[in-house]
Length: 126
Image (cartoon, rainbow, N blue to C red):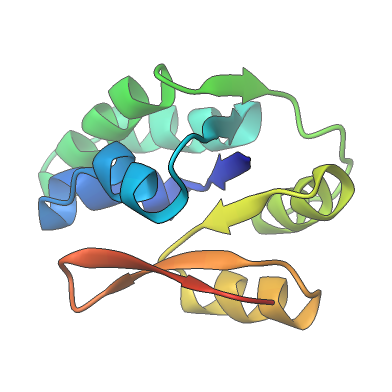
């Protein structure tokens, strides 16, 4: 199963102390983590800053390197729209903690993994 990690998902390990890959393994068993090049670009921009968000982005970049990084193949302006298009086209489950993106994915019938009680991940069927 291909699991698409968005920017917000890759920030979760540093922000909330969640072991993203162990949690996904518990949910799905074997899975293939995928990250869009555009997500890596967003993380790189955040990582150049200072403070907690920049530190979380640096951890996120290290996590992204453990996944398959792919181009979205989309011309949409917003990265969230690229995530939606890629997930729809490739049949991926998306991991995000972004409420707006989650709702858009569910409206498209795409399964979403979200953080529950800042401790664990939960699958919501789209």
